[in-house]
Image 1 (tube, rainbow, N blue to C red):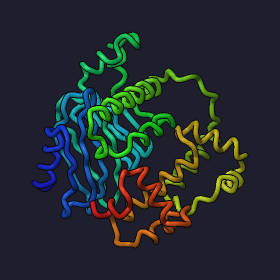
Image 2 (cartoon, rainbow, N blue to C red; image 1 turned 120 degrees about the horizontal axis):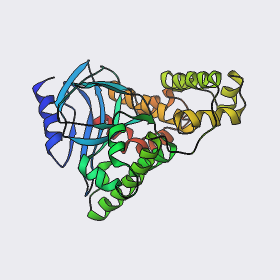
Image 3 (cartoon, rainbow, N blue to C red; image 1 turned 135 degrees about the vertical axis):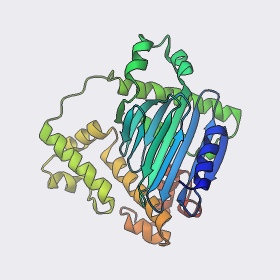
Image 4 (cartoon, helix red, strand yellow; image 1 turned 30 degrees about the vertical axis):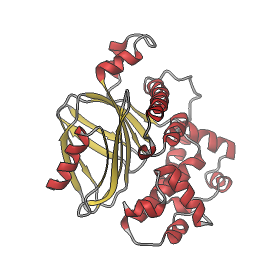
Amino acid sequence: MGHELLGMYQEIQRTPELAIDIPDESGKGRIVRLDTGIFSLSSWEMMFHRNTFVEGSVPGDLRLLFCSGDGVEWFTDSGSMCLDHNEACFCLSDGSAERMCYQGGSSFSFLSVSVPAERFVNIIDGYVKDTDKIMDVLPGRRFAIPVEVYKALHDIGSLENIHSGFEMMRLDARLLETLSLCLQTALCEQEAKPHLHQDDLTIIRTIGKRIEDDPATIPDIPTLAHEYCMSVSKLTRSFRKVYGISLHAYVIGARLQKGAQLLAGSETPIEEIAEMVGGYAKPRHFSADFRKRFGLLPGEYRLH
């Protein structure tokens, strides 16, 4: 890691509120940190020119990580963790060093919500039983982001748009609700759902991978259902069960992620990118969806 990039990571750890761009020689992207009355949040949008090795210590907090871009794996002295697209996980840091390698040309998008472990216990104490047991089993739990959480994260928007104390209070309230939903999901306390047959699970996973690899060529849902010999209702119901969000939302998210990758890695006009990612007859519709997802218009994202 270059000295400038290392200094940037150190500044992120110690500064309660900042927005900082990835150094041009390293890649493109923006990292934003915001501390509320309860939580510390940071959003990471990054694409590096080449494989980039990162190492640094993380404060001893409980972290809830959301991945909406390409997956990543990282290592600590106690083992390794990985996170895939549209997954979340709980991590308990002990202050030791974490190491990872970001693959060059990949588009990474994360949101991290952290809170001191002792404060986390105080938050959930009184609402749940056996907090000691929860703290033993929770770290390392990974899960598909539930649709309710997906919507909550969408409503939060860009951290750079939150300024006043009242906005901070509302953000804390949303995060508390999000935390409860993620805890319920990670601890498998949600209502029992019908079992998905292994053959159906394989098909849904195949469709999900196809969407991630080439979202521009994904047909409409009836055509997709016909290709895989499923009814539309079974396909949409099964997809939501596996990925936690609707098939339509998953396709839109993959197309926007591909658009972000093209914006950061090329000078292709925005109108052409909107056409290349598929599903957008008019560039303004692409721009509107892009802003909802990333908090910036495509042109603003490219400048960052």
